[in-house]
Image 1 (cartoon, rainbow, N blue to C red):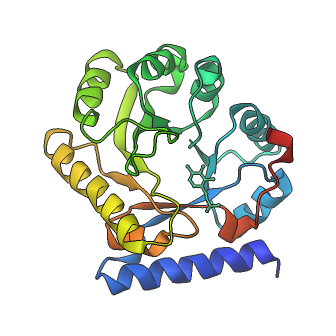
Image 2: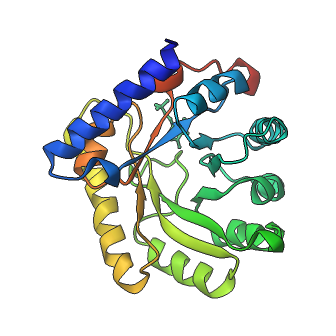
Length: 236
Ligand SMILES: *Cc1c(COP(=O)(O)O)cnc(C)c1O
C-alpha cells in the first residue's frame, strides 16, 4: 500500500479519536487534503483512497492541475482555494474553485462575485479571520468580521458565506493555539444566529489538528501529514 493511502487512513483514525475525546461524532469533522506543490499523481492516489475534497494555495498551479484532472475524468472533486487571494488571480480562482476559503476583504469578494461564471450558480466562500494577530498573516480581524460579512451579504449575491477559516500561530504553546481556535469558534457561534448558512469552521492543520477539533473545527486542512514535506523551490 502506498504511503498516501496509509497516511489518509491514519489521519481519519486520529480525527475519530480526537472527536470522540470531546464527544463529537467523527462525521462532524471533514478532511480537506491540501495538495499544493504536489503532482497530480499524488492527488490521484488520495482520490483512490476515497478523498474527494482538496485544497490548493497557488492559483496558476492549481488551475493547471484542476484542468488536467477534469480532462482525465476526475469530475467529482470539490476544490477549495485556501491561499492568499491576489487581485490579478481572482478570475482564475472564480472560474475553477468550488469553495474559496480565503476571502478577507470586500474588494476581492466583489471581484469574485463579478467574475464567477453565472451558469455555475452561487459559489461557496469562507471568511479568513486573522486569529493569531500576526501582522504578516492574511485575514480580517475578529472585530472587523461582522461588518465584512454584512457588506458581502449585501453586495455579492453570487457568493454564499458558509463559514470561517483560521490559521493558528505556529507555536509549541498549545494553550495559545487553543485560545485562538476558541475565539474563532465563539465568533462563528455568534454569527450563525444572524446568518444560518454559516456552519463551517475550517481550522486545524497537520500540527494542531487535535486542538482544532477540541475547539469545534468542522474541517481540518491537512497537507504534510498526507503528502509529506513540501518543496517550495518552484514557488519563489
Ligand atoms: C499549506 C496549508 C495547510 C496545510 O498545512 P500542513 O501543515 O502541511 O498540514 C493548511 N491550511 C492552509 C491555509 C495552508 O496554506
